[in-house]
Length: 129
Image (cartoon, rainbow, N blue to C red; front, side):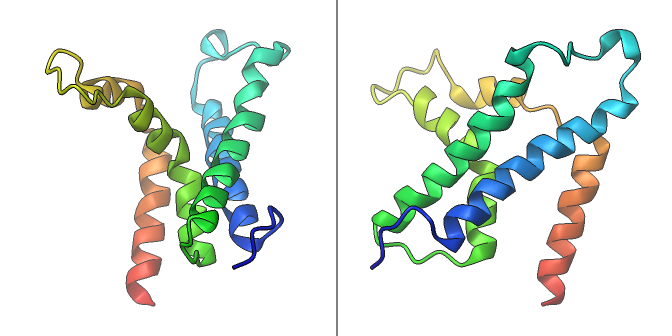
């Protein structure tokens, strides 16, 4: 088992997470100019660095754990890494019903129509194979 950080699955997860952030950026064309974020603010661009690093890091953790990742699975891990890590962080091991992470995630996830179309296309492509 190779544990080098520079492996194809890590790259695929990195670029999968980056693709989601770039898709969000592309969807801003449908937002009114007054509602668009301030692109000159460095805080706006931090997720474009952090999310791909988290995606690649999570894929690396899978590899070190002994899981053999195919590129498509690694890209899927990169795409879903922010949700996976947020769910882990909000998990309540004591079983307190007051803080349901599922409710928080449902409010936090904002799916644009083009995102749905993208994932529908991915799903159809996987079915055809």
